[in-house]
Amino acid sequence: MATIPSTLLDVYDRWIRAERRPQERFVWRPESWRKRLGEMDLVDLDAIADACEQAGNGTRDRIDREIVRGLHSPAILRPDGGSYDPKAVVTAFVAAMIWGYGTTGYGPYRTARVLTTDTEAVQHLVDVAGYAQGESAGGVKSFEHIAGQGRNYLKYLGPAFGTKFLYFLTAASDVAETTPVMDGVIRRWFAGEPDISLVTSSWDPRSYRTYLSSLDTWRKELLAVRGGVELDRDDLEFLIFASTRRDANAWGDPFEAPTVDQLLDLLETEIVDLDAQRGSTEGDRLLRQLADWVSGSEETS
Image 1 (tube, rainbow, N blue to C red):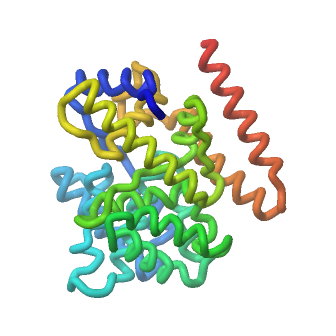
Image 2: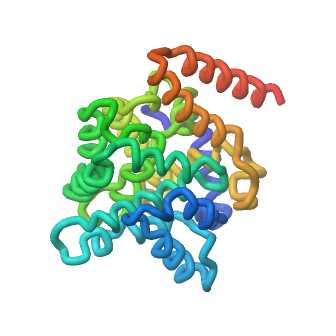
Image 3: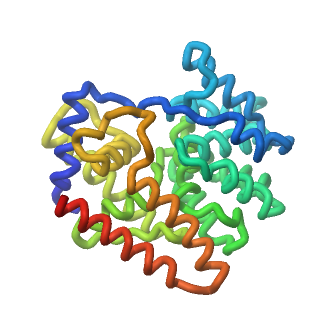
């Protein structure tokens, strides 16, 4: 971790030339989510659509990071400054999943599965929110809390999408230091860095700490070699994602089809579930072979 990766420097320079262009809003499908989650009393999809409308000049079906972050604000999750409001927490969680699944069609089903398989899912999400927003290192504490609870705790919510919830909780907090997303796209990007190996198929605290430490080191180095304004951890996470989309697509059409990396990330979540059900590791091995094959194809194309 002594030297910042050249790929990160390159995408940073292009981002600066693009005047630090933020991630674009994209279309989500409220009716698809309503079909799966509309009957759940603690899911307020209208609140999510209302937030989109307020931020998007009347448009209720386009969402972005800032809209989702606002729904995770402590002022919304704890309106009286005391206990967390379960409905606000669950709604914020659903908003994070809407953002995380993007334009794919899997999101409503998989999110509903998390909320219904664990009979205590609502209380567990409230607990996680409290850990995440409660102190400076709250994101790491909440990650470690989930890791220590066993397989059935928030079952079907792996770190790939669980850290999306942690990200927005910490980013919205005035107390906690932001802890960004760590999913399959991040893991595959880090696989190209010597001596850094991340695990995203299970809640592995060592991997999350390594990831955050790497981001902290690199953002300090970026400030040293490029100057300007100091970046946050989630800025680097955004740049890593941008670097996987190649130069021509880094800040392209926000409504374009999912990238291969995004599809592999979604497939990884499903494969981990199937392996757990069957007591196997064969699916994970085959998925890694597929990811390696895709990487090799990209290098020769």
